Image 1 (cartoon, chains in turn green, yellow):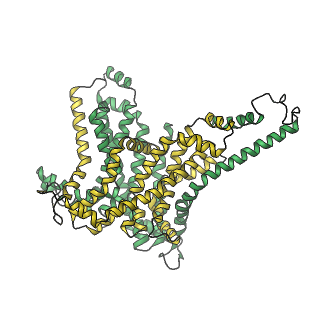
Image 2 (cartoon, chains in turn brown, blue; image 1 turned 180 degrees about the vertical axis):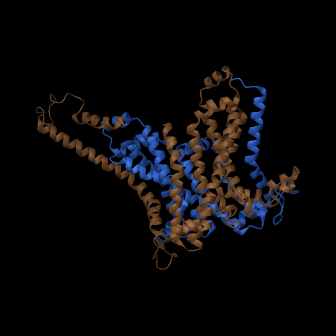
Image 3 (cartoon, chains in turn yellow, orange; image 1 turned 45 degrees about the vertical axis):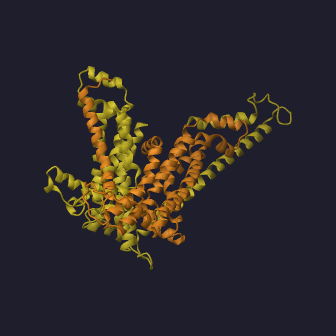
Length: 336
Length: 274
């Protein structure tokens, strides 16, 4: 902010030309400076500032145009459509709050919102927790050869399409997939089951896919955070007789507040807005047991042709995400 | 730092275990892809004879060449335009800071946490009304809009760090805003731009929803969109579907392994800023 106030001053000096003392400087015509020439100069400077302001605003226009057309405008329309009954082709009729009543009373829709909350446990808590433990254990070998290889390997889930992750895991979790085969191999064959094919385990199965995708990123972010902690703190703790666990809770965890907030934000958004993974594994089934808001909006809007309800769910969905993510973001800001 | 031997071993074992968990789905994918087409292999079984022909078969059936070209076209449509307009906006909001820049930035931030499916229905009707359905523009244009909040925020953060003196010096030498941008700031922004470019490339290449919704023909989609289509087409022939998936993942994996340092740092920074 300091630079902002300094700018007009600097411009003024440039305007006067070479930083000579005002009042002694000869005017443009060689005459001694008068009040009139100063006023003229002020006008020129102000005009330049205004012009630069307009140029600067003009630079934002292309980005704002795309963002406005393809994000903000549909957002406005989502609010608008949520108050109408419309099947996407015919005439729309006023609905008042009908659509919102449906959103909060339909068991499928409420279920989809609840499922999204459950997915937070899998997509977010699980990888952050595992990532934290793993990073704490391997902290001291963060620069070893093995750790560098691990860095590459554990990033793989981040660079493939989520649909591919879903597809691979659909196979992993299928009747003869690797998970069941492994269970049979270690003599736990009676636990083998079609994980994604039955309502009782399908949501957990989808959750595992999300956890698999997020684990590497979380671990590496937390590990990067840990390597920034001053080793002297640990030496001091050791001298004071602190064990590994005490060390973790008194030094490591408090120093990672920022990184943890990042991990939680990224993964919680991924959980709430899960679409690709669900689509590729279960499409919301069986019996709506893995239905999530993203897929439900899709169903309502494009298959059932209940555009108003899809829009109302969209509104509720946006508010839900903001209500959960903004407090975490605030925590993140505190660090800066 | 003092590390005891047991600690070292526990660390190593844990790290290897994590790597195995990460890599196993890929291993299963490749193993299954090598089984006889139409067979129903187990997830851990190694085929007696490797059917490399599956890859050829999948490549031809899926029109893989055209598919890759389609994704490439979409990336070419999205990434350069996004980089250019995000850099302009970021330069303005982060460096020139015209009156109202904070308010404008907050409006952009609004889109950061937006769950994109929330607006998908009106977006579809809008693209339909623009007569863009079934064309790649139906994927390209909305994607640029969707990427703007992050991209503008990214470039703004970069330009906030640039010293004011630099611009002052150029101004004294008589540079216009335009020259200041192209001659001074763009060349200095290359690291930020290349990281953003990598992220945008990945997000475009891997984008699924718009591709599935706006374009029916899989060879006009993104790679991820086509993958969704295979699932319906080859659902029963698991080895062939896995072979197709391997082929589809291959280009990204190769690019990743070639530029892994840049990718890892871009993705980590991307998460930290997002």
